[in-house]
Every structure is written in structure tokens, then in C-alpha cells.
Amino acid sequence: RLLSASRILRSLETVDAQAAADDAVGRAARLGGDVGAIVLDAEGRIGWAHDTPQFGVAYATSALAPAAFLSRTQDSQAR
Image (cartoon, rainbow, N blue to C red; front, side):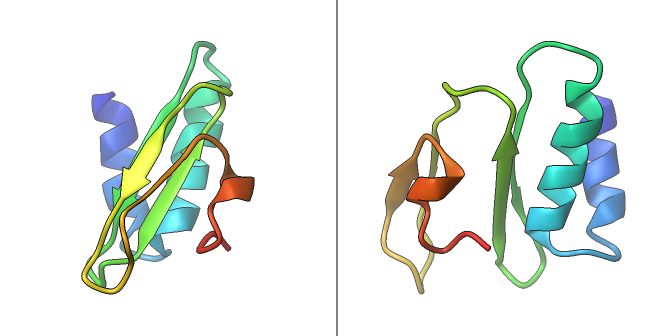
């Protein structure tokens, strides 16, 4: 977990929250097990990724109503 968190923080220096989450989950998933990340960047953008079908994600911001999802296809804000 600590290594994944460190990778996410370093990634955020050059990419947005979604790219940082995708990269971290992709790297950790190669090691095996279930992996997921929810990331917020300095501009308040949300990114999330997981490699398991049972990873719940929820978020709310001053600009977005509270929302909860189990897959990327359910998130209309996803890029």
C-alpha cells in the first residue's frame, strides 16, 4: 500500500488523478490480489480504478452530487 501511495503521489506531479489511479492499479495488479485506488489531485479532480468486480467507489464534491459506483461504466463523470 505504501509503495502504491508513493507512486500515486509521484504520478500526480505530471498526470491527472485518473491517470495516476490507472497507473498505480495496473502496476499493483501485476503482483496479484485485488487492487483499487481512489485519487484526488490538487485541482480537486477525482480518479479511481480497480481490478476487481467488487470495489465500491463513492464521492461528492461542491460541484458534483454524491454518487456511488461499482464499475467505470456507471460513472458518467469518468473519462
